[in-house]
Length: 116
Image 1 (cartoon, rainbow, N blue to C red):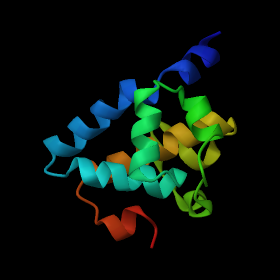
Image 2: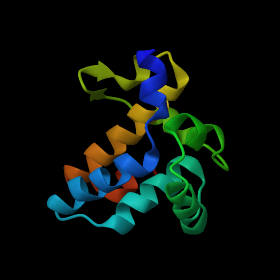
Image 3: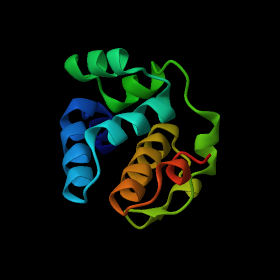
Image 4: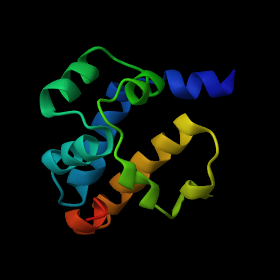
């Protein structure tokens, strides 16, 4: 039951927290959006549509236009767990996103965040 609740959380409920975290550290909403675009293949229009429909994380990732294959290069610890060791696919995608937002808030350059 806990697993289901985690994935049924809407992306729209977490998105403003991501933006606030970034802005608190001097970064921008545009940079947060760029991370979402890079990770999922959504453009700005489709991202906004997803946010408006209160889609769950599970459906957001399942319906993404193109999950970036370079996301497997994301390594490190989020919430005390190594993202590369997470076996459950949806939770791994959520933690990839968390890690990228963390890196943004810590001042990392966008080309490094986006693994370019």
